[in-house]
Amino acid sequence: MTDAKAGPGVGTDTPGFDRRLLPPMLLGSVLNPINSTIIAVALVPIGRALGAPASQTAWLVSALYLATSLGQPVVGRLIDVFGPRRLFLLSTGLVGVAGVVGALAPDLGVLIGARVLLGFGTCAGYPAAMALVRSEAERTGRDSPGGVLTALAVANQTIAVVGPLLGGLLIAVGGWRTTFALNVPLAVAAVLLGLLRLPKAEPKTEPEAEPEAEATARLAGGSTRHGSLAARLDLPGMGLFAAMLVSLLLFLMNLHLRDWYLLALSAAAGAAFAVRELRAATPFIDLRVLGGNTPLLATYGRALVAYVVAYSFLYGFTQWTEEGFGLTPFHAGLAQIPMFLLAIGVSIVSGRSTSLRGKLLLGAVGQITACLVILMLGGDSPLWMLLLVALIFGVPQGLNNLALQNSVYFQADPERTASSAGLLRTFAYIGSMVASSATAASFGQHADTGGLHRLAWVMLGAGVLYLLLTLFDRTLGRAAGTGTRASV
Image (cartoon, rainbow, N blue to C red; front, side, top):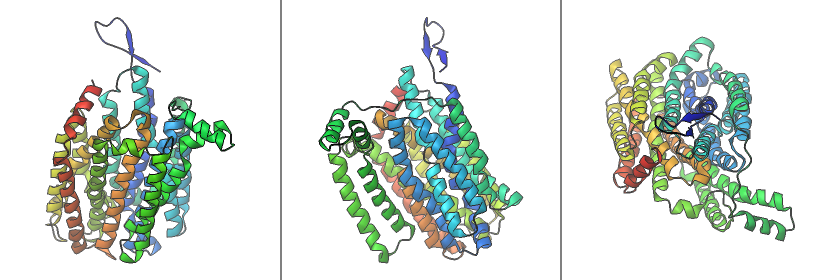
């Protein structure tokens, strides 16, 4: 690890954040957003090549989010226990495998399978990065510089917005299969960086829960070491969480009363999960702590509705610009350049401020304004109106992700930073699944202007809810205050 001088007038060296960790942290954390967004401009070409309507290609979006929303908190918990290195290497290696499968896929079913692999493969990057930020804070004795969190947010933001443009360029050069093949060199680079730069760490221990876990293992007649490990991982809790989440997301993918049994199954699994977690010595998700952490719960709620708006725009608006407005995939990506430029600038400037409420309120207003402009769009609208919508969306795109990420870092239990960060992504991806379902229901077989307007009303409702969740959240002042003290 490298050390940094404390500054003039200080006689001792103060350890600083190890900047060598930044490349694997940044690359690992962007693998998910690049695969989440690059597919936006590929849906129409894939549908045409494989003879699949928009309602079927929507599964390419849903499959990744289904896998990722389940995998992020699970992998995050494994990172909390074992450290980030080994999980990072395993997951990013899987990304390369998924890239090969997707590039060679003969039909839509195999392509959906490749997206599932990508979902699981990209699970470790973001939780690992947040865990490294926390571990560096503990090693140095001071909170990691705000610039590190901002760099993570900006990197994810940059990739999320530039993804459609990159996807359009790749499709123009080599067809839609290149959007999957891109994962091979990215995975190789991530694995090499992880091997070279991520620290080898021993699994973390939880001293307060360890004796009880060991006693349970002995009473069961099993190995103390393996019993303790199983208790710390809470495999039954993970299984019930998976059953609850998968059934819920399958219901959200295609909202219909005939699938009521999925919602009932999710509720039953959720009840069993709650009972299990309240009784477990070292629960997968500590519901007692989470239930008492109102600021963190509010942050998760805001993430859900924010992503309904963001991903409805990303997938729905992009499909409409191609089918309803007549742009090519490459030009559809170019149309989002204003959002890309403004979002990066907003993230960099706002990253210097620790005020959470201001960022969240301005992001909410930006979402609502953009939705209202979308309602005025038509197939014969001038191109500058499309660019205006993208420009307006740059404001919430640059503010919301940064504010939500910083909120979780300061609100979460330090011992569960990675799993809390993973759970943030789970709520975000539930919102993304709602967005995917709303997009498919609004467009049906063709992404026309009427479908875009129906989708815009859904987005507007979510944007208003986001604003209300922010206006009436009295914990934001305390969260901002905590962030200010921690970042000094």
